[in-house]
Length: 275
Image 1 (cartoon, helix red, strand yellow):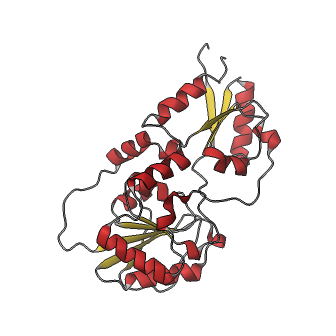
Image 2 (image 1 turned 30 degrees about the vertical axis):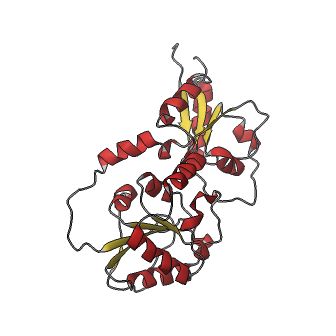
């Protein structure tokens, strides 16, 4: 009973969260909110969920970006931990062991381009996304894959023979096996950055903007620009530098020097209550 005990939750507006808050209060457990991913895009509006925010003792959030979607709790005395466990280097290394890449080299392997579709279908132009898929499939020596989000855009159009719609395969494995990741409105690109994979943001096909400028070289503004940068990646590799990569991960996932999870637990233990 002398142990510090906390209950972790990832959604503010959810019946399970309501129940967990009541259960935690009844058992005198501390309540920690963990943003389940990052919000890598600029937000025009802030939400006001002050009453729910006050229910928590600590928030693990992604810098100021995710804080905007939660609401302003600057004066509430709640412990704020700017980090994102999902994109920590430690967790990335764990996943590398689970989804270890086969190092066997395949001769004459086709360049594999994977489109990771967003769950926010209303924020993307389906026409532009499909046109980009079809245009990429016409490039020489390529194989194109499309990974729909489980709750996002569905493509029922007839696609070229060298385009595959992927099913229930773990996204980490898909990224490891790909040569280039295309994204619009999804934090999945950070998994690719952690794995040093080339990425392209299909800027012209979505109405959201990246909130960090560290990946400006990876943005494309029309289909011609897109195809040109795909060719550059084929020939030269990543569009971002080592410095860009570090800035990107620092901005979205916090500066951790490989110790993010340890740092998070140290801060949590300093805040949560004794039973």
